[in-house]
Image (cartoon, rainbow, N blue to C red; front, side):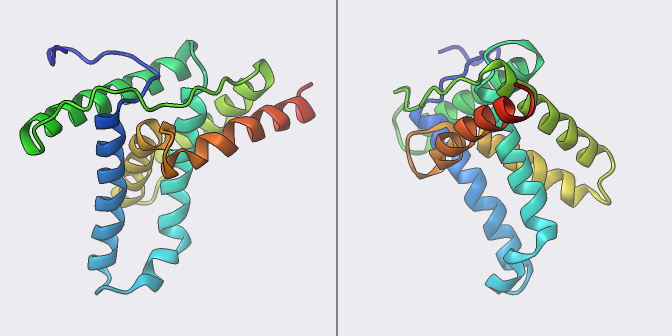
Length: 174
């Protein structure tokens, strides 16, 4: 795999899933230590909403194979795969190029639900009070585009979010 350009893909590799999980752990560990090692600080809505909105939007965007959402999520997933591959070679001595993604597809109506949530996430980022909220959303989006697509515990978002979005889209849009 060449590291000169980022491949646009919707299939997360084991290395990409690992780097997404590392971003998840690093984000919440930073907040844990920032608040003097208190877990109660991690339950605040000001941390949960931006992070999980970003995670959920990118999981749904990855189920759209084309268009703007597919391009954004494919770029994030490909970048995560390549970052994970580079870190794996340097830190653990393997490449981790085995695909571990589950591939759920959104219906036409479900894709519109994903597009609306993507627009809300962009507006949330645009009107965020500070850079901390934006950083949490970006971290959540990166974790969603990598670890959130895997067949591991992180993939729970994809296993539940894609069918839920399809059902909601059929219910509201038709």
